[in-house]
Image (cartoon, rainbow, N blue to C red):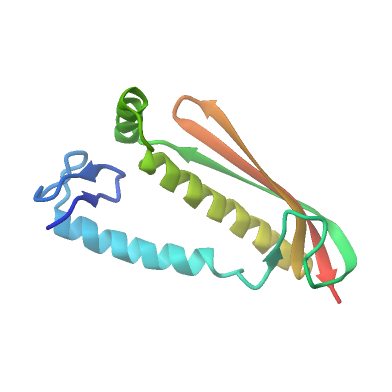
Length: 154
């Protein structure tokens, strides 16, 4: 491989390394698995994209005709030990911890997808007043919760 690569186990590996330093899988296999998993996740995360989401009490440019109730969703993310080591190093020398940032972005996508799925089950077209909360529940676990109100649009 000509550039640094991240194994599906979460370990970042330097360019030229043939096997993951975390789990030992080959770079070629890791790349193939990551591509397959990425395609699957992309389909799953975009399945409910037609449901509109807003943090405001209304959808801009649309009118709500009925409120169907509140929905909630939770995601708990476990951080990988190698990400913790990288984070500790970054904490000392400064800089962004991209491994954690990627986990947070993924968790946010998943929790919003769960809200959208619940909205669709209830027959809604949009979620308003959506709120996200993040909480560390242990040194290596993070919980993301979301809530919103399901509405039918005119």
